[in-house]
Length: 165
Image (tube, rainbow, N blue to C red):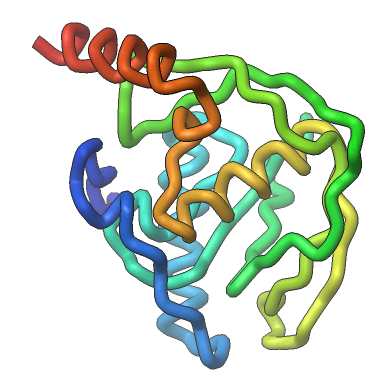
């Protein structure tokens, strides 16, 4: 099964907050399966449903070295974030050909609905924490480059547009 195409920047859906998920259903599990397939095909360490044009608060993250350990999350929200930052080069299939080093909290505690429909709180560090925060940004209508200064953001978008021609 092929996954839906990635929504390309500047599609307005990438700036629109996603709708909360009320319960975990077979349809939600099928969307998560499709998201994992898309994430693995990139390859990437996380994906938000919004990136495929699905306007629901769904995320998958797999920053494991062995892969195949994707965590499925609905309605994730950060409860606590460390003061210590971590820099990592981030990119998005929604704006191919561009990336930037972004500083985010090194560790976060996140509350979400898990695949069984239970509320779970989990601590994430390093790449897992970076990816979870990146995906939550997508759910809130925010892109990674929104963390940059206006000048750096404009240059990054211009570079990506030039690369598409």
